[in-house]
Length: 237
Image (cartoon, rainbow, N blue to C red):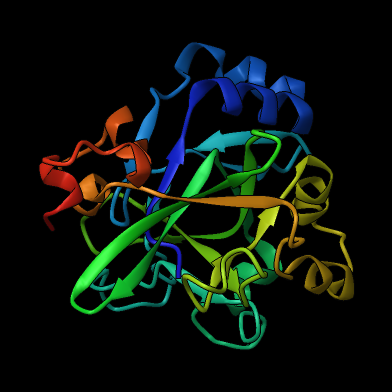
């Protein structure tokens, strides 16, 4: 289950340029600041295909609320690849409203007794990637429309499996273009919802600063091996 991730400007620029240079040009004046602890319930940078078949950015809230939902409480932040095409919550979005969420790394937590130890997973080559996502628009009486999104998760590869039993679906620019293609056949989409290759990612155990949602700074990326002996965030939370 993916519930926290990282997005840095340098990797974002390279990633979006490879996807669609026009989308990067449109975003240039509003690039988001580096984020080191992005959590559910917050607005994200995402990309979707417009009616003109151009890639456009938007800012959905993380936690998908179907258009038919009675309220927006406790929305799911992840959709399982195995059931996304059939579950009513995600079925229509999977068919018609797919999106991409850029990232430069994601966190998973290793449970050791009562302690939760964060691990950061990045591409081995240092490049960014896209999460395969879905988006929806929900409207309540007398409120503005709310756009929301969720990530798709799948079984873990050999890198992630020692830490967690799920991982997000990650896409490079070529696969991302297919994910946004409204004419893509179902079999081609399903083929994208697989674990990343075992050699694509590398995992690093971090100090526990990331465990606290109030912390969103480069120190969140400090490897556990570099923590001072008295570092409070390697011992707390």
